[in-house]
Amino acid sequence: PAQATPQPAAQPTAPTASQEPGKLVDATEALKNPKVVVASTKITAEDPLSASMQAYFSIRAKAQILNFQHQLKISKELNDGKPLSYDQFMDLVHQLKVDFIALPPWQMIGYDAKAGDLMLLEDKGEKIKRYKAANIAIDPADQKYDTP
Image (cartoon, rainbow, N blue to C red; front, side):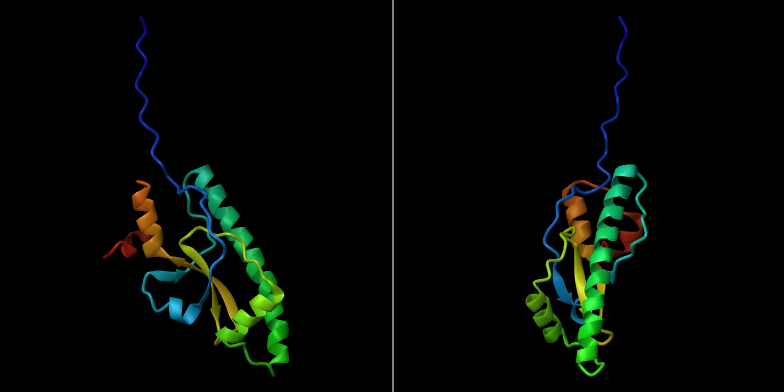
């Protein structure tokens, strides 16, 4: 009888699409943590599923950030040309009932009060912790953040 060739077990390569509501943070404060970085929208995944997920998150987050940045520019003009403080920014978010998209739990939207801009931030420490818990290989670019 023919013997079946054992197939290697598939290795997980990306986290599940678990998402949390878009978390807003003060970028200046968040970036004090050496493991929090401005996220790249470059797709680095090697397999099609991971690439699709990264593109989905990056494009959706970028579109929402651009839309809200337009609102910030209007508010800046009404604030004598000065960027809003973080507290004013949060007031605007609540007044406009801005609902940011869900992001992977290690990502957040940061507001930079000095520049009056929004950015997508990523907590590499949280990402690595979740990858390890799910037995997923850490991206080579993230390995330098795998410290205690």
